[in-house]
Length: 310
Length: 306
Image (cartoon, rainbow over all chains, first blue to last red):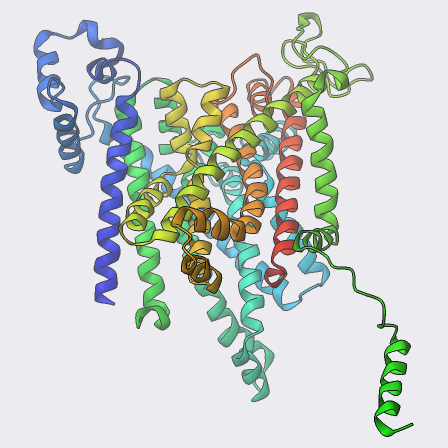
């Protein structure tokens, strides 16, 4: 177990390193010299001293590999540079400002998806080939194919503009959360429901379920104590691995609903060519995904003795 | 008649009764058996027909368009559906139905070309990684891990913005990023095939690695790869629409379903009808490719059938 944890963490660190090289490389390829990219339109109004200070801090007059390590060192200490558009505002302040709305949205969407999908998949498997099962399977197929940005637009038209029940966009009281959380949860719910049904069906066919029934346990005990607990194992890994997809969805949902989170900050920054902010958010997202994956693997090892003992 | 002749006659009679003698069972290739299993999954067949129709529309959209897809008509901008314009007109008076039909082409061009790129890369990386193992596998697997650590849409947005959005950029950035999942699947399959007897047999008669991979390993992962290809097209069409919707995919004036949704969003208060039809087309097309993928999975690997 100890070896596994160390090995997994080492892999994670290597991948983080590779991700940082990729991110640095992509933004280097952006049009314009790095100092122009860093200064934006304001470059002309800067004094020679400011110019020299930035040149010095990011090592922009040095070769690219020196620049990369300077950049990495600054990033590692939480210094993501200053925003170009909101001149002088440190990037980490902008990201921190936007973090809470994004965390709220993602946690609520994930919770909603789990709360809906797990029971749905479970009952579909227990009552296999019933109408309920068919309905769940139709929903699962449709939910994966639905473009969430379109669903968002349709909900705005129907519930906000036509019926006037919910506000069309922006943050506020609980009504403002309904549409963004729903849209962000659609794909996840469909995927998790389908997986839960599959996992449940597989577990229900195992010998130990037959044994449990044969020794006279009630059906509820068989399902809850023996089947569901085992069926949940593969689901937990998948939830962790879906972190990247959830963050992708955040960008779309926050853009549609004018949600003041990191996803929208990212999107706006791309269009304003505020590459310092873009870089910081891409790094933040990837590190989050890598951590989520490591955490998932470790949790899995912790709750499944078969993995732990290997 | 001695006893053994009697037995033989009885056996012959039994065989004749069940009608087995002389009727040689038609030999079927693995492919035709797979096809027969696929046909039994009705949603898959319906989807395949639907995709076929869309493919024809994508090839010769001009035949089906009632109006020009690009001609603007400012006097009739934002008109709702009518007998003349079934799906209405957009914010600068263009016929929505004609643009929807023309948009099929972009969906298919991007879907098929990006799928080809990503499958080629995924197949190559997965096969090499799984077959050789060792440090080659370790290096390639870390690259795959790295790619998978990026939220896909975030990576696509960044790359498109840096490279300058266009049709070519869209195909390229999607094709060169989504292969990581396919590489993982192929790698896992190759890992198990590598240990099979026919691979040892091939090696024992002197086949080299290239020959073993191309002639013995890859044909055996073809089934799963065809399934992946179908699912990949659906996935890619959603990504392309999302990119175009966000303004970083297909650029105006080329009609794409995602781009039409962006127009619809910009005029959502005054002309909400613009945003409805393109989303339904994206949904149906992606659903069709996914269902064909599901059907193919059952057809190639009946054991996996849910």
